[in-house]
Image 1 (cartoon, rainbow, N blue to C red):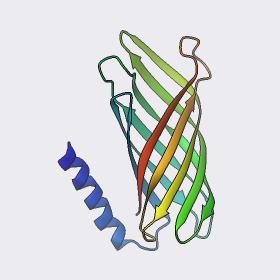
Image 2: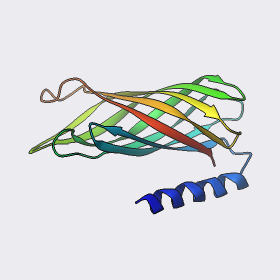
Image 3: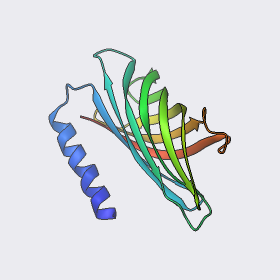
Image 4: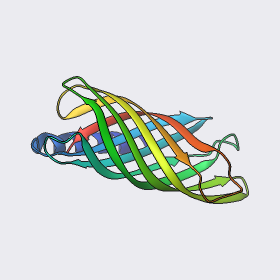
Length: 159
């Protein structure tokens, strides 16, 4: 698994070095929640000179001995860059998503708004690293109350 993740990261870095004029970004995220592992990615496309973009996300959170739920979430988002200078990128990304939750014998699918808050440090125009907070809200299910909350480390690469 580690080999696959490293191969993916280095392949994306090599590809991003070839297309410096693009305003498309891919971001890998990874974190831990109650002993389970969170892994996912985002895609964002921005117009030249714009502080806002659009894209999608995918997040998978594994289960660890019943201590946490297994979650797979995906959806669309609009990312707004509140600060995007030469060193830092602070963003908020509202959107809408579907989350499939497995808690022991119970399965639940929720629909609703999502929001991501990100703070990244830019090493260059091609690569940034930082943290991201992900929240998914439930609109339709009475069996699942509350939100899904995750904090992940993020590595963003320009395509």
